Image 1 (cartoon, helix red, strand yellow):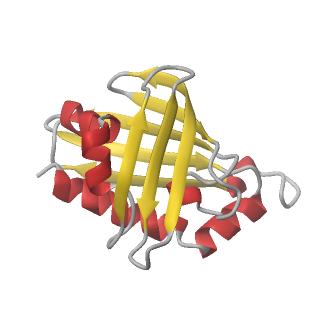
Image 2 (cartoon, rainbow, N blue to C red):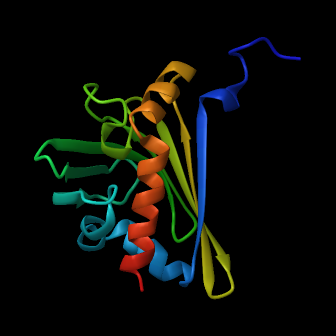
Length: 158
């Protein structure tokens, strides 16, 4: 039995969604800035700019805009790209917000795209720096917001 706080899964969030779309389409919607701007963020949010240098060491930047006019910058660096199966990146988002516009500060995010015939299972796995960061992000709406963003992605690809 492990001591409280030493379980690595305690600082992780895993969200899975199955899309009625082929993996190539889901991959494109996740990696093409023109598509990302259409669905990233919870309901009611929009995006004013997006850049994605999809290569190891490349940067991801997005400016997410809340309905109240607040802006939330989202940025990260890619560590692994296995087209069309997996993307791994670390967040370099602003420390001012625990969600960091969907990429929490100092978190590693792994996105997997699993082909299920003509459907695709997408898994978003976030490993936070520690349990406190995970709890702060979830209190700020991290898991709920990603659920809404993935719903927007499903609507976008149909």
